[in-house]
Amino acid sequence: MASSGKPHIVVLGAGLGGTIAAYEIKAAVGDRAEVTVVAKEERFHFVPSNPWVAVHWRKREAIEVPLAPVFKRKAIGFTAVGARKVHPAENRLDLNDGSSLAYDYLVIATGPELAFDEIEGLGPHGGHTQSICHVDHAQTAAAAFDALAARPGPVVIGAVQGASCFGPAYEFALILDTELRRRKIRDKVPMTFVTSEPYIGHLGLDGVGDTKGLLESEMRQRHIKWITNARVAKVEPGMMHVEEVAEDGAVARTQDLPFAFSMMLPAFRGVEAVRGIDGLTNPRGFILADSHQRNPTFRNIYSLGVCVAIAPVGKTPVPVGVPKTGFMIESMVTAIAHNLKQEIDGQAPSHEATWNAICLADFGDGGVAFIAQPQIPPRNVNWAASGKWVHLAKVGFEKYFLSKVKRGESEPFYEKLALDIIGARKLKG
Image (cartoon, rainbow, N blue to C red; front, top):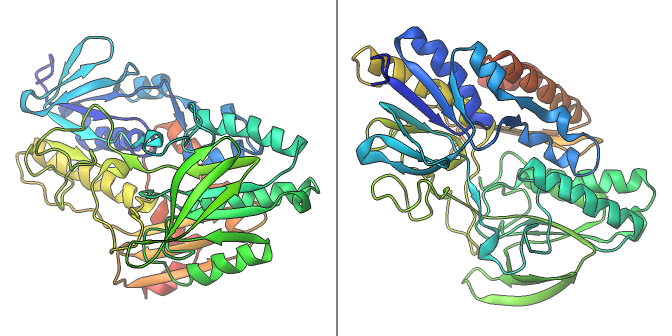
């Protein structure tokens, strides 16, 4: 119990899921529990806008929100010192400043650790490729893009083996193509898309609607070559060594791809604060959760978002993870908020997340949208479409979500988007 005698709910992480979870949980439990957020940064960053930051379509400050004032206004505790280790058996966290924080309920929403170190030469930290996974990376990528614009050359974009987030790779490849054409230097920049997916548009979901056809068509029209079933062996300055893997797992052929600029999404793993805890995580450090988002071993621990363990859709020649899209994360948040309210009321948790997916992949001058209900097949709704409206919808989404964070509100957005903007109401029929 907190010093007030009320149950203490700690939310670990303040990204897309953790911030909204804190708002919704506080709204659900009111004054009957204390809510505290533990983050490693003072500011919220709207990660879906990172591809725009990397080509100077957005400034960093335009996609950031200082969190302390909002949490204070909402009577939510907040610290940005970060957590060093979770001790589930003791119901406490070790924080990076040396202090300890006790909890009655813990909601883990850390997002992933980026596993750049698993491939030699990968990543912006001592490696030779760029990333758009964090706004810091996007700013570094923007500087590298400026160098490319000054001295055009080959570009390699994609996602490595074990990656579970493919949409941003497609977005960035096509946004980059759009910006290079606007600058009238696209003809000097050969582009190759390298992905661990078994086919273009797989997305870690075995495709949604005709994402294969839509994305292949976009890449053909934009003269972007691609390599699928790709495993990145290592990256050297200006050179990526790629292995194409056959269905039996053998290396079919190798390619050495020169580049003047490269952005490759890494594989994810659980953050250090939770990795290696028996009963809490799987071997990659992702949090084990039941249908109520509750850990089967430590029943007072919930989890949401990218840190949750989800099995791959099916076997592929190169490891491919499952994405956790915003629609799925929002539904996890709502289920957890209701379940915590039930627990505080002395009831058993009964709410389950609806693992549906909706994605707006912006290309700057158009885009592709898809809806999967549920996310993992077989599905009741399996729909994809493209058009200039997707770009406009993504811009609207950014403005709405940032305003929601600034106001401290948790109103679900993705289902409304699916039903009203895309017209999925008819599909729901």
